[in-house]
Image (tube, rainbow, N blue to C red):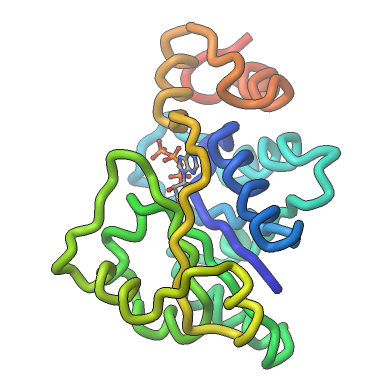
Length: 212
Ligand code: ATP
């Protein structure tokens, strides 16, 4: 099974890292590939560069053999489209290998606005991680997809290469990258929200508006 978990990771924090481990464990300790996405320059100048976000991810996963980084979206020019990433991976994996995309309910709520979203649900299984406070509109296409393709057990995803959906509700740490950027920008501590190594490197690099 090949699992990807995409995000901006600006910066990576304990919410992302715990979730990745929880998902890994649900599937019998499979590796989870963190896929940092390309961020368009207009997203705001306080964010870290691609190289910096990747560096922070590398520090965050030190010593954790289940977590990996897949930097293909950073290496690709232009916008990051999940459909392109999944198609590439599908070509690299054997036809029978289950490919799983992990996404929070907040991101999945707008899934029908993603490029080629119907293709995505054929290229991979979708694991939707319930985020407290983020609900799906029951009439919307994402909720319908979950109802039509949804399975109840993690084991079911091993039985075919793609096309199923699974909802998981692991414990969710109430941490956001935005909250970390704000704290650092204001010169406050972000300790215990992200690994110490990540926070020290943020200060050393002087990103998010505050330098050592
Ligand atoms: P920002 O505050 O900049 O919007 P974020 O903390 O929400 O960032 P992203 O990189 O945008 O993080 O999110 C990537 C993925 O991680 C999304 O699928 C999102 O649902 C999920 N995610 C975000 N925060 C958490 C958290 N606290 N625990 C688990 N998953 C999270």
